[in-house]
Image (tube, rainbow, N blue to C red; front, top):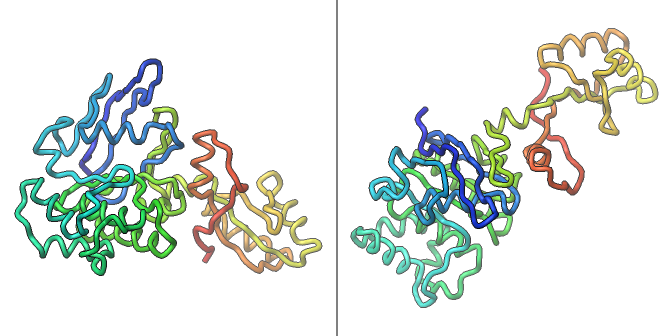
Length: 313
């Protein structure tokens, strides 16, 4: 799969501060790619370099096969960085028409209305943006990023200020853009559960460096365990733990067996043969939030939770 973005040794310094520190990254074409990191990790600096807004101190990068700032490559990109701002006296429809003309496109009501509908702003199309909520401005910002029909779009915190239904709608839109429209979507968000649900791959950054990268599935199945709820509760857990030895632990209510998936069925048969009833058996793995806090060294609150990732059959 070809890459839409390649960076090699990308570094950006501000005096003694290294906002990016030798970042080498390859983002494949297609799907949704998450860029995660705590504040100050270098995400916004990376995006600004890719968009040609600032120059790197060292290193190189290509976007859509071209050099940073190459007009042909830039025309194939769309972006929304931070909360967008537009002339308050304009309506949402006028904003998109204005931006179309600024990009050298003809005013096209059909195209404008289509993107307003995709982001859920049809009913507010003729309202002045001065009365828009933060969430509505975010929606308009996404529509503005899409008005040129790009192949690659960068979205920085697109669900900021949205209520839960709005977040769910934005998640569905992002997935649709990638899977139905064929766009490559690069997404930065502090809402890790949303990232886990919507992204295909993620890169975790910390202090300007790449600390972890891979598919969401690979990152969240590391340390996968078989969770067993057993009866009788007064003796079965202890008997199962004795059978498993140091491969057993507990989450407080059930036994966690640290075994490969291939050994799961044999383990269940062995427990049943010893007269232990299994009320429930399922595979659990670390969620993306846990991976994030482990890799960045940040303090996690509340305690790490586990997520269900499949059932034994």
